[in-house]
Image (tube, rainbow, N blue to C red; front, side, top):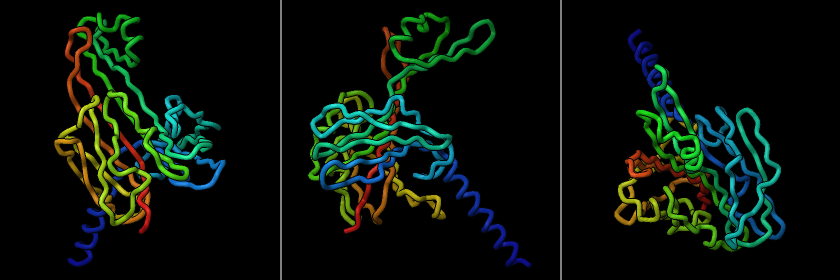
Length: 271
């Protein structure tokens, strides 16, 4: 009787642990292949916000802000865009050899204020913020959000033209090329925040298919003074890296909160 009760408690605790680990909604993009060879290749990219990594079960990703940067730094069109209930999808033609950056994100503002006894909320870009006079609202609180969700695909030999940064929010400057990662080998990535090394940023790295594990088995790291993290993926597979930072900025002389986030999906190949 006692043994049965203890087993039941253990099962319940395990279920709560799994439910807790799966409760966070995570945004991601996953290409059908990370590395290819030959000519005239294509990749299909899935995009979603889900409870489990690479298993679409919550919400499809909005494709309005998707951009693709080719190996020469020029823009490449994302083709055949479509969105369903839980997953979005699009294709990218790889016509030139090198590394392609596939990215989604935005830089926008959020505001809230009290008006006629009712709480008002607003979201938009800097141009609309000014045009609509949001800053002039009595008691308004304004914050800024800069987010990026990325993945990288290489045709033939990798290169680094697609890694050019613009000095806004969190950005990846690879020490190890994300398409040159192998299980059992050390990997280093550098994160920049507004163009400078992002020191002290917490980073989560989780191998995909966590739906089929009892725990996430993720890594929690902190960037060093150079904004760098170093780790060794133990198993082959697709990985999800997430980082976030909070800070302050000024908007027309007023201090506001700024939240930056960065997500990248990469693959660790077997040796």
